Length: 302
Image 1: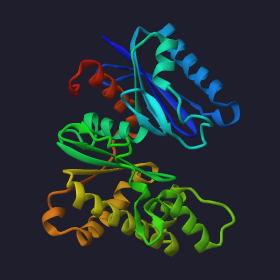
Image 2 (image 1 turned 90 degrees about the horizontal axis):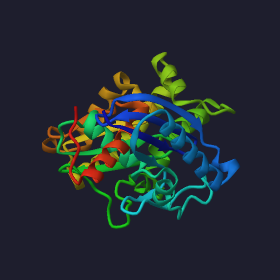
Image 3 (image 1 turned 135 degrees about the horizontal axis):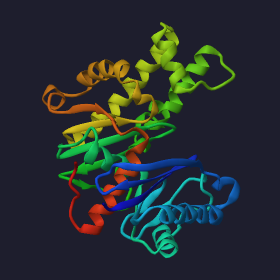
């Protein structure tokens, strides 16, 4: 049995685990991302130590990485990243981790990795094309057509959150989890920011402000999803992110909203689904990316 190290580098945490070549986890854990306080070099050294510790415990054959930021997957260079990891832009991450670990390393953007994970092992399994949306503080996306992840000319394909769908406001300004909780806080006059789960619990308890805010969120998300469907026409649209775990509440709302936004011929041929791999999606997709690039052909699912 061949094992691999998987890392999912986010702005607030680093998830890591050991998987088989079939994507079955033997071990997984997470640590807070302290790069903002410790600096880039200390953060990179921490990644190297995590890999070394895994090598000492398991027989591993490669390192699969999903990371925040715009990534050149051919070179493994971080082309652009937010200040959550200071100085991360321009980092030659693949080169660094390969040198430190003496193992094959492959790097992919985190939302692209989620799309790959759901395509391989989750809600997109068996589909020929899909668009995966990660809805959180912002909105990110990953596009797969005929089994191939689409990167775009500047490796920015899928960055749908920057679309202007509400005048001068971007999609993620009106349709992210951050937008939802801010709207509810304003409506209720709160001096603190609730979490998405609070908003949904209030809505389930009959709270009018919470219910109306969720309905507006779904309407705004559906407008953007419709635009994507008209341009790309994917077989499946997958919704991920913490609030998208409220499947029973959200599914009928999306069904009604999308039926209004899309022509019947498009709506009937577009399957809306919700991510199934949870917090493991990025690591699973990173593994799929590693296997595919190392073998030169798509990995087979289980």
